[in-house]
Length: 295
Image 1 (tube, rainbow, N blue to C red):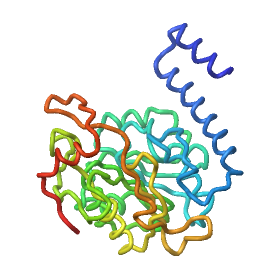
Image 2 (image 1 turned 30 degrees about the horizontal axis):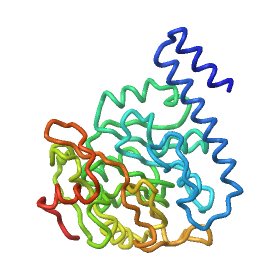
Image 3 (image 1 turned 30 degrees about the vertical axis):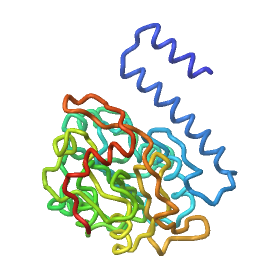
């Protein structure tokens, strides 16, 4: 209640936007600590049941916390790309609560400048890099900015070439991989959008629905790289993979059928960029004529 009261005080006295954001972050973080403590005694064999949201868009903070608490991870170092200004991300809670180090990448210099002015940048050991990630440059980026091959976690969310970039990576070996999938592409075929170095989701098709890869495509690729699918988030857009040699009684491999979640959110757009709130069947129909590559 004291923290909530403080927010109202900040609003009433017209304190700067940065100060308000800082106080909201404190509230979120404290709430995250409470959620984490509450989940410590939870008895469930389903990782998805440990979801909670602090700084992540959906329940990724809870799933990642569960995984790092139940896996034997050698290096507490993460890489996340597609982070925006990093206020909403998959690794911010990991950084603040578990004091990991990391590399964060975004294609916008404005976002990187914002991150470097955020106090989190001097309070923690992170490096923020402005790069448009592609399969051609990803290994060079890692070789120049990451000192170890074995890292704790890799989070991929670039709204397009996610499959192709993960496939190209050879210079790091993460214990955990979090990667976005597109549930509109179904749960039976190994589909991905064809590779285009300069792929941008909102330009590829006005609907904003044509991007990424199906869960089966990512599972197949994961197996080739030595990973097991252990869960998806309930929102139906992120899959979590763990190195097979790290699996244990609390982190087990799931089949596609067991893990797959169909997205519930509705983000389709019309040609004027207005939300259209299509249902799942309508979304699939809208992009059914577009080219997909079976891998």
